[in-house]
Length: 351
Ligand SMILES: [Mn+2]
Image 1 (tube, rainbow, N blue to C red):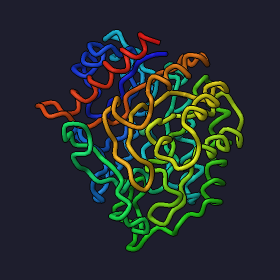
Image 2 (image 1 turned 90 degrees about the vertical axis):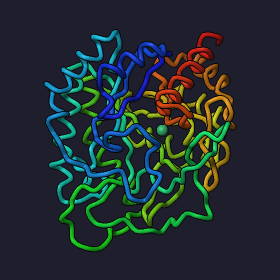
Image 3 (image 1 turned 180 degrees about the horizontal axis):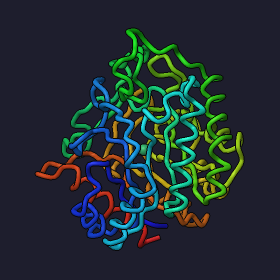
């Protein structure tokens, strides 16, 4: 098992590569879509959204990917994967819209370029509403700022404006009005279309597609169906296009928030079948619709037990801390990450 750090686009700089190395990480997961621009903070705590999806293609080009990989390597680290497509590049893939095939061609090219450069994993979140509905508050130990879901405050039917998907605006000229709700059946058909198009390309070039579960894992959000909102839907996702390139970006916190299943049995089953691309690790208290994200050592999940199961099943991929509570100091994000990385490194050395 390997320890990694996820970095948002504006954080893909030398200083943070050094920080990752200093905290004991060996691998980097890079976000190329520019949400939370210029600020390392807790994402999505207002309904204002995650910003504008620019549709910038240059940063996804083979040359840019090679440059990014080289700068990660120069710091003694390995670029394990990219996380999240740009909503402007695949909104009609998610919605089953008219630009779907054209957008899939671009995504195929990204996968081919990742294969050529040697970036083994592409994490994605097949979601229309995206991460939405959280509230921020002093929910973690010592009143550390964190996020949570508070069912009584949540309007699950708040509609999504046209030109917005995955909590980002991709078309500022979209007509007034709201997206037509996408049903469970339509969402799964769109996923199947996506996987049938991309998995063969990914297989050919040695890249793994890794699906993030729904965060928050509610059955519907903003009127739209959710995909992996219970553990059994991961099994369905693996089965609709069986392949070693069709795996999970397994978010332990999101799965722990689901109302069905048993996280230890689920992780055991998925790791035995080698269906885990890489892991987001965080801890949580509660389940949907009421939970709080907390420090890695204080929630409902026995993190040591998760590591033991992964080790027993020979998981040799990367684990990164997911979002963490913000610590009271001048570098709240970095302190939270350093704490989580140190904890994970300690547990890994003891199992
Ligand atoms: Mn996650």
